[in-house]
Length: 181
Image (cartoon, rainbow, N blue to C red; front, side, top):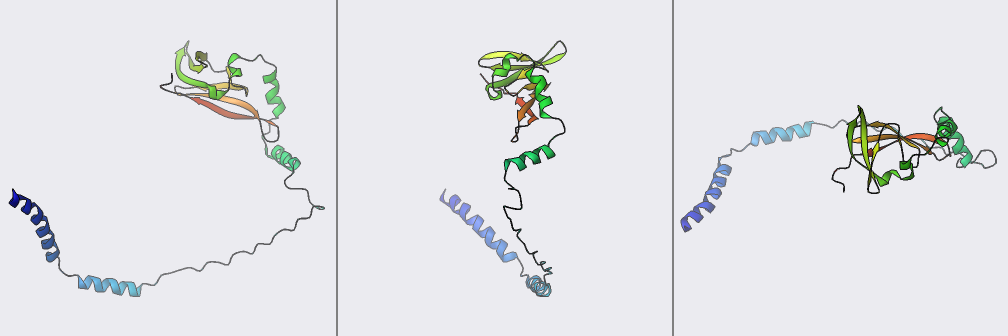
């Protein structure tokens, strides 16, 4: 038993010594590498001079305040979508509100979907009750209209106000939540 333990320790040590002793010296390779290092010169391209920054003088009397709400509103109107916000919200305010519009989207959970009458129907849980939702139904307080239903997602188009108090469209979705009770 003791000789076996001794051989387990001694065998790897002897194998390591044999491997080190068998490697021939590589002096010629070392000399070639040193010569290559001496001959190789790095090619560094010089960095161009930085451009000088010239600050713009600001005078309150001659220029408008760049941080005013009026300038922000003008910029948002100029860069915003072509459709007017009033037209987006007008038709939504004249229709009868649906029951699921009184709940926020984060209180709703999509728990499944199914085919019914050739049309996909999403199953949405709100406050412990299960509701069937179809394309065209409304969800959430932001005039969210269901635009598409897939096996794993319910897509909505919402109408919300932006920073300039303009009505704009945005996309939202409810993802399928598995193992919810």
